[in-house]
Image (cartoon, rainbow, N blue to C red; front, side, top):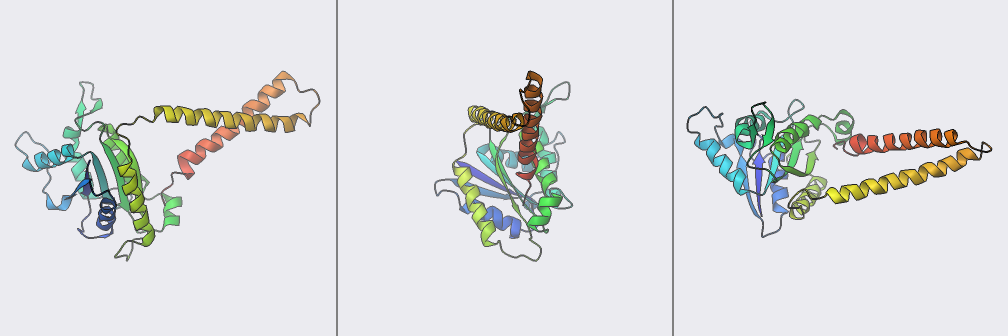
Length: 253
């Protein structure tokens, strides 16, 4: 396995770089690792002429199984270095149809992680979501290119910070473990269906239990009362669960 760290920060040894280095250091000894410091390269778009910089970067991307996209969050999104890299590599990451549809290119089925840092606190980031767009941009670019996401990490409260905290380093070690245990392909479809079955079965059981409480208040429940109460209770449970998994659980801290 080969892991490539892509550092889109202006400081070679800043907090973002240190978190990236800690994640790479947490990998098993037999994993090959390399870091690209984007500030070292004069990255320009393809213009029909030779572009040795993009050629070299493309070779490094192709030779790696997993990419770690590391960028600080500036003005609520990725750094200019990372944005320029993704923009200039776009024609090599995806292919376009005659109808302008974007399809995965040569990097399809590789894996990636996202890593970012920001000045604000963990609690403020949870409510404001200042790093959300950073991850959305990276996800949009890489999933469009056919890559599969493993995980992500946010380093908050970095204002005036010169070294990662113990908690941040511990999370880097967890990321390193996830990289080592990652699936070769996104073959978790059966697992997702089983999880869905378990979720539906649990909500149905809870719904029927609540119905029994309602029926105690009414003598001789009719078919329509049973039907309407089931739909309403099930809908409320489902909406609450979806809200939790799509908003609260995935809020970055």
